[in-house]
Image (cartoon, rainbow, N blue to C red; front, side):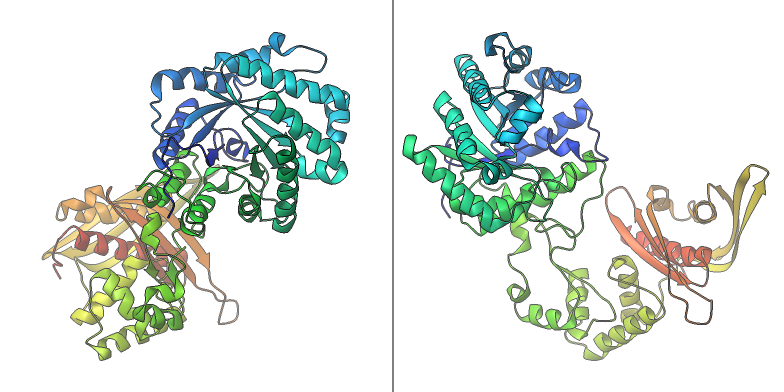
Length: 539
């Protein structure tokens, strides 16, 4: 793999999560959020972090002010975003350009119109004046000691409509001193073949007047091709890629930083990150997802929880021989892990590999592996699913290995009561009766729902006997009504995710009603957590 030092400027990974990514519906970043995300991106090793539009957005203005005092970037340079000067004015008198300089950012990205129709209808000026706006703005910022990149908005649409003018925009930017001219697929309608052909043509024109002139790519994902379009541009000679973490962005999003970097490093053999940073990719992706308050995409390439998950028995049999037979890379290269999913599609190989993952060697006991497979298929026929409930599967496996169920108590009964007043439900109460360590216990719990009340009652009954329960917390709860099998009857499946503050585990329960299914999932959650805490079953 070609090694490139951090001082090598031959290829740029440019992140615009804090500006373009923040335009995604549902994302609303505070300045503190932006600073935290910038630290993660710098740790990952991107070369440029576009922080926002100072002067046009008070929050972005504050971000750059705080960044100067609080951010210690080791790999990235901070970039301020803005637009070319206004039509009919002068760059030296333009307040927005002055705000870009005042931001203190060493690099400035200016958006410029590259589509003739947009120049005439949006800017309401002439094509020649638009070119002069680009020249004047770039020259002004260069004179202020700033490095300048130009984003050619709607470039590909403009190129199709008026090739000669789109090329004139690129020429004006380069000749005024822009270091990189970025071709933007603003509407996200391009496909890889068209991107490759267009970038190659533009680069050939650039080399006719400025050999070595650099082009970049900014791809939106409206056709689902943003990553492919970005790599097609690289194939054609682009040396600057603009992306966002996890593909965040307006409408359906932008080119996803992580698959782009993964492809460049692992498929193109191009070192674009500092040594060792690629292995942090999964962690960084998930950390940023938490900061923007969006659940990480489980099926995202490279970094998704399911990116290297295998379910089919045929796959498992092959992976048992050689993991590379059904994986395009070693998941550890990007900080991820291979997972075996156990379901009604599982065979003996799937169970053996999953058992090994959990610390059980089933390869020498074919009868045991067979019993586990049969039990899984039987349970899944009843509505259970273990591919999202590893803790419940491990308890099932322990049952078969030990020949009995791990029990920390013996249940006598449970019940729930929901009271409804004139303004709706006014209270939920649960009573649990059980035996633990030879002692009969009765506990009552109240909660904001019957399941929460059951959780409180069970905790109250057991916590003094099993102190680790104090650290347990239910963090996610999912219900699915399964298809009815007997007339209008149906079953309910409940998935519960729990944590003890250091790890999380998922359990499943299936029953004829939601509260009974919840109780079964809750029992598994408590049992698994206590085993994890190192306690021995009492019953």
